[in-house]
Image (tube, rainbow, N blue to C red):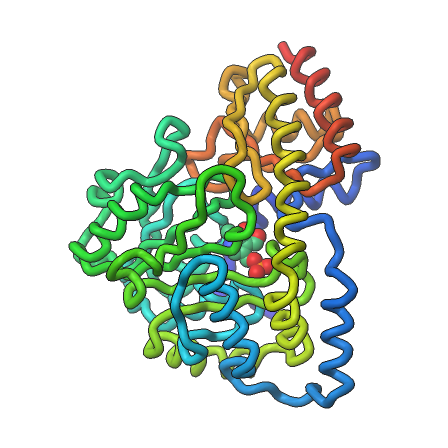
Length: 384
Ligand SMILES: Cc1ncc(COP(=O)(O)O)c(C=O)c1O
């Protein structure tokens, strides 16, 4: 058997290598996991079982059930002021399928997509797979890991079609302020761009506000909002995501998805609708827990030798600066794992701008975070 040439270059990502190493080790405190540690609430599971018992065991409508898409619209209107109609929503197999389908629908070979570093790693592969070109725009800690309009403008060429934004951001946890988003929106209009706005962490904001990009004046027809159930409702295993955008694009994505997934798991859709309609109070509860954890870890990190860490803004990630240790992100992470049995992800796994940083996911109980910080503190104190 011979694999296709295009897969011959596929290597496990920096993150996968760490996870593979952990499997062979004992007593590792894993701060690398990008999913909430909470199980799905039982009433959500009951809603799935109820739907299955009521007969939702057949092929679902290809775009998703109408009532489920309507619930998505209600949720975004209620929480973020985004006006949308069910025909502007597509239910997908996880949030990760949304940019995949959108790029399939939009990119001709050689068309360019701007990725703002540090970025969620799969985006790069998704662009390249479609024959697109990923233009990586660097950011710095000094400018809050948010793209300046100047930097974006310098990267643009006549072939640039899509700008991919992710706020709150994985891996930095940074939230792009409204003022900056407005400036970006002006550039989007001026240069006739389309925005894929990954807002999967919309429910986890600790500082400032979540601005849904499509709510900015003139942006609705230029934006596909991507989100899903994984992070907000602790439903990673259910694989439910959705895109909200212009009808023409949603229709094209639906046609493409037909030959891939042929609709999204029916009971999982129904459970998601139940969760979106009934669990706003749980979002508040969990946000408080993450906020306390992030606050604790930030304080501890700032008390450690050669580490500085900005306070949490969104998602459940911290992105401490370890440049003063003199080690690269990769070297630091492997040494920390081998010597102290604490797993983190090197910032460089998310693009060059992440060099000198670590991604720490606060997706463990406070007891584990306390132990992990104790180990990390001793490790840093002993580092020459
Ligand atoms: C920024 C970002 N976008 C999208 C996803 C995809 O999430 P899912 O496919 O579980 O909905 C993730 C998951 O880690 C993420 O961090």
